[in-house]
Amino acid sequence: MVSIKKLFDEKHVHVAFEISLTLKGAFALAEIAASIFAYVVTKQFLLDLVRAITCMELSEDPHDFVANYLVHAAQSLSVSSQNFTAFYLLSHGVIKLFLIIGLWQKKLGYYPAAIAVFSLFILYQAYRFSFTHSLSLLLITVLDAVVIGLTWFEYQHLRHLLPNGQRK
Image (tube, rainbow, N blue to C red; front, top):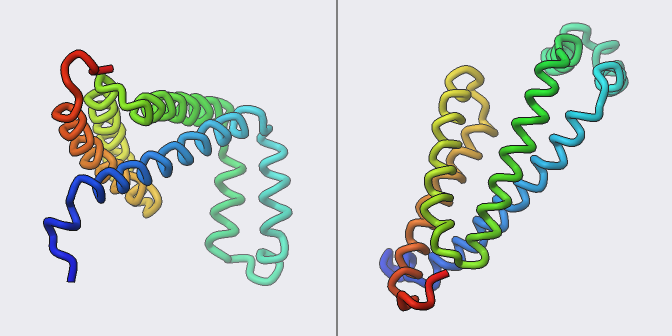
């Protein structure tokens, strides 16, 4: 049986930190791609796509919850909400990617900045969760909390490892 102390040794925490950065980086790139998609896709294209996807299900069951929800969401999409979504995803993705690159390069100043920014993201996500109760939003928030913890441990390790003259 693996002891708790061995599980949380520096090597395991560092590997978990690198894995979490990889996941966060992938999410950041996906957010940037989604922001571009949200900006360039027209409401009519989205509505046609949703209708094509849901037409068979709605012909079999006109009261299907998911299909009706998707059609309603596509119909009620406004240009301002589409622009906000595109801006939010782009800014969120770019900020995360910028911080993750600094963390990959082990630049010490990025660690407290990343902890602060990811904490602000968690606060906003908790606020949004209070309205949406979205499981995916909850999972992203938990991942952010784990990344914050791992970032803190990695930061403490690097601060003690690097002499003052070698700090980046």
